[in-house]
Image 1 (cartoon, rainbow, N blue to C red):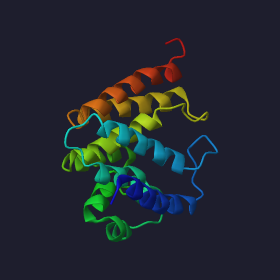
Image 2: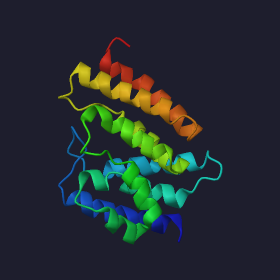
Image 3: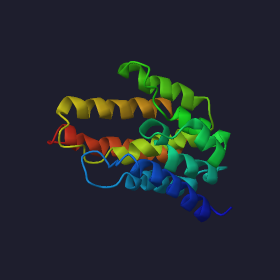
Length: 183
């Protein structure tokens, strides 16, 4: 199947699931599919700078990465529609709600790191797209915490995709202006 068809099939599935939750990008009125397509765009560009990159696998995960975490979609539904390998990648990208907040990111990173580099790439791309203008209700402490998580993520996933690592490093530096307006 061509990448365009894979993209269309996957984005339709993901959009339906997120629309059922009336989900928007936090701090905006934009439908959540905009975030998903931005993550997929990062993956499409990264694939052009990456050797032996499984683009079809990565695009599916980019578009589905929040479906287990944010919708009623099950692992089984993703496995049936897109394959077990994709479902396992999406599961690794999903924070475990049974864990304390302080442990969720580290647990997810641990699970990501035992999978293919494309899973690493989706996590990097997700954080790149999330390091935009923070929601207006976030205080400096929350913005700092989010930036620090991005730094941790970059450190933990170094070696996964050099192009996306460089992009994330640039986004982290640009995000400083939201923490310290004098930067």
